[in-house]
Length: 240
Length: 240
Image 1: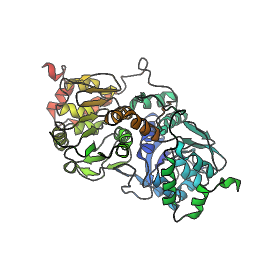
Image 2: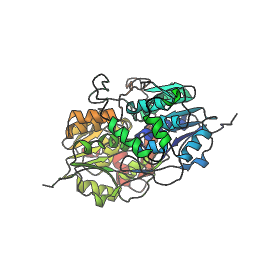
Image 3: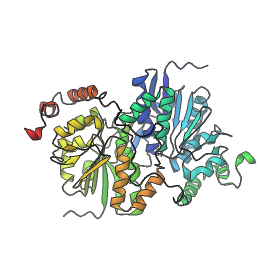
Image 4: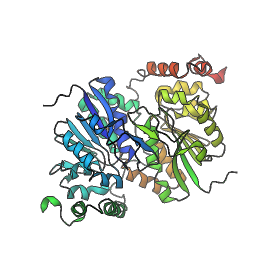
C-alpha cells in the first residue's frame, strides 16, 4: 500500500490539449489545500517547457512526470488532434500506467478518457467523453454514457470541456466535504447563466464534428496503423 | 475611424492572473474565425514569455502589445494579488488607453474590471466584478451591479471567474449570431450541472474573503499610496 501522507493532485499537461479541460477543474481543486493541508495541487508534463495548445497561448507545467511519481489523484484533460496524438505517447502512457494502481482516483475530462482507454485502463468500464467522440471511446473498449460525469471504481470521467468544472466540484466534495466544494464554487463564482440556456440535445446538430474527428484520426495515427484500425474498424476491439 | 478589416480579439495576459478568467471566454471566442473569417483571436502581453498565474501553470502569450496595437475587442481577465498589481502597471495601462477609443468592445472578466477602472475607463459607468471586490470597484468610480455581465456603452464586464464563459457566449452572438454562439457552446459542451446547484446568494458566506482582499491591497500598493488610499478611504473618490 502506497503511503499518501501528501495527497498530490496531478493534472497532466501535453502538447495540443484544450486548456479549458485542465484550467476549469484545476481552478476548483486549487482550493483544497486551504481546507485540508494534506492536499497539494500540481501540473505535470514530460518536460517543464511551454507547450502549444488549441488556443493562442502556451502552457508550462510545474513539474516533470518524474517529480510527481505517486499522485493521489491524476486528472487527464482532453482536446482534439493533440489528444489523439497523446494516446500513442509512450512517456504519458508510462506515467498513467505507473500512477493508476496506487492512485485514489484517475480522472479525465473530455477526450482525456481516450488517453486512459488507449492505455487499457477503461476496458469494460462505464465512462464518458466529449459527445463527438463517443464511438471512439466505445471502440477502445469502454462503455460510453451520456452523463456529465461517470464514476466506475477509481475511474472518474467527465463529458466535454466545461464538464470538468462540474466533475471537479463533485470530486472536491468527495475528497473533503460539500462545504469546501461550495466555497470553491463561490470563489470561482460558478453560478452558470448560459445566455441561451443549456444544450438542447434533441435539436442540437451532433453530426457537424464528424468530418473533423475523421481528419484528426487520420492525421494522428498515420504511423500507428493498429490504433487507426481500432478507431475506424467496423467492430469494437473488445468484440474481436 | 480606424479600419478593422481584420477584427482582432485580443486577450490580455499579465503575471499572476486567474487563468480560468481568460481561458473560459477564449475557448468560446476561439470558434468565431471559423464562422466569420474577419475575426482572429490572440493573446497579448508585455513580453512573449511564460508568466506565473495563481495556478501551478505558467502561460505564454502569442504576441506583444505592440504586435496587436488596434484590437477590435479587448478582454481583460482578473485575478487576485497579480491583478491588483496590474492596476498600476504602466505598459498594460498604456495598451488599454490606446486600444479603448477605437475598439468595438472593451471587456473584462472578474476583477479585470478593476484594471479598466484604475485606468479611468469606467468612471460613472455601470459595471461588475467578482462579488468580493464590489466595494473596490465602486471606490474606483464605477457603479457595481450584481449581474452575470453588465454592458454600458462599449464596456462589457462579467462577474467573477466562470462568468466570463456566459459573457463570451453573449458576445459571440452579438458579433455573429445566436447559431454561432450555440455551436461554440456545443463544442465546449457547456450544459452546466453544478452538483450542488447554483450559488444561493441568500445563504452564502460573503465575508470570508474580506481579509484576503485587504491583504492583497496592502501588498500590491505598498509603494502606491494614492491607489491604496483610493481603495481603502472612507469615501469613494468620485464623491470627494
